[in-house]
Length: 115
Length: 118
Image 1 (tube, rainbow over the protein chains, first blue to last red):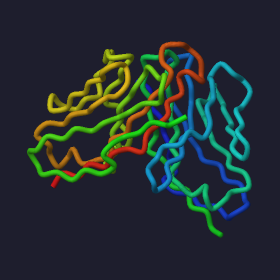
Image 2 (cartoon, chains in turn brown, green; image 1 turned 135 degrees about the horizontal axis):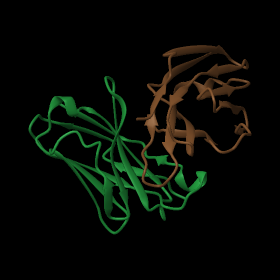
Image 3 (cartoon, rainbow over the protein chains, first blue to last red; image 1 turned 180 degrees about the vertical axis):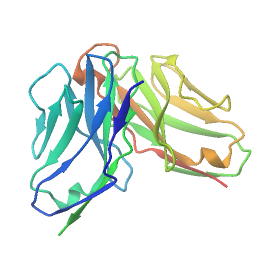
Image 4 (cartoon, rainbow over the protein chains, first blue to last red; image 1 turned 45 degrees about the vertical axis):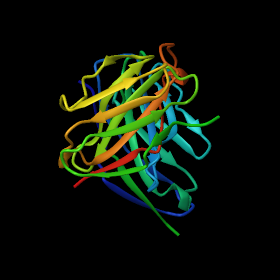
């Protein structure tokens, strides 16, 4: 079975600084996707970034980028130039490739941003 | 276009009552997923629909839980004889469906229904 581990329950960052959120996963599959979702207090899960396992290049979306280490099964999220609106819970998620597959989530990390 | 919508936003019910939660996916999305988010268990998968069929019901916690999808669109999750441990946020997500590819397989979530069983 696939597992996703987020070992840091909370992190804090100063506004305009950079923060990295860690995630590790375990799978025997070779084709899969990894995601970071953001959940603010409104509880709406918002897609932050997606990484295809077959791609060697790390995904980037504006201030958000990932460090994908396939051999180490590590998938960290870097947030640059942190903003107050980045404060939320962040979930790392795994999905086996193929439509009939669910997302498996980590326990999440609460990120606070200090003004 | 419009995102995934869910109703009601909040539901308070008494133990033993039945509740129905509704999900309206993004137009054109053929895959629909239900998840449950609770403090003790985190985010758990409940059921997956492809069109009107449910090829994966493995996450439903008991036979009190059922779901259906009609017209390949709206889905209803029904919890019968609710228990206090059913209190959670119920999230619905949709995606394009069976075509492979990161874009097609990305799931987009609704705002959730917060269920409180007294």
